Length: 107
Image (tube, rainbow, N blue to C red; front, side, top):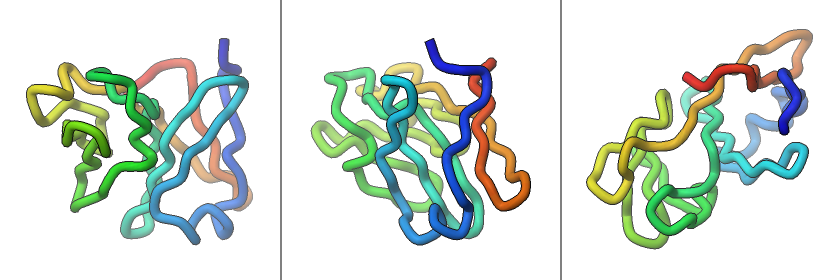
């Protein structure tokens, strides 16, 4: 089980990549940096468990690399039939230059 709050790293380093695969305490997430904002979603597509961190980003949507299911990066909501209800999205905060995820409740 994941800790209530996890430190994802320094914002200045995380800003260098638009889509990142992140593993914390055995769980996998996709971290997205877009237009100065960060978003954290569960990494596995609910259709066939493809890694969303290998997908394509367009506006506020990430597309699964296997079967093109689409998700809203702000909420994790599924935007296409194969996406189902979507994936969990986790709230993020910045403190002292570090990015933290609150794992107590998905958005």
